[in-house]
Length: 114
Image (cartoon, rainbow, N blue to C red; front, side, top):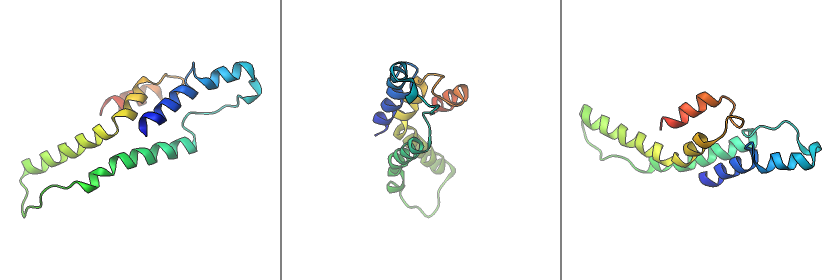
C-alpha cells in the first residue's frame, strides 16, 4: 500500500510527473494543487496506521516485575518494528523532490531518522 501511494505521489506531483506534462498541453487544468491535500493525507494516514497496527497484536510476555533492561529492550523492539513498518513511505519521502514537499529540509531530515 505504501509503495503504491509513494509511486502515485512521485509519478503525478513530481516536477517531471504526469501532472506537469498535462499542464503543458492543457494549462486550464493546472490549478495550484499540493501533493499532500486532504484526500491524499487521509490515504497516507490510513495506510501508515494499518501498517503499524500489528504492534498492537504483538505483546511481550507478561511478568510480575520488569527490570529496566527488559523495558529498554521491549521499547527498542517496538520502535524498530514501527520504523520497519513505515520504511517504504519514509524512503519515498527521502526520494521526493523539493518542489513536492511543504518544508523540504525538515521533511527530509525527519524521514531519514527512522
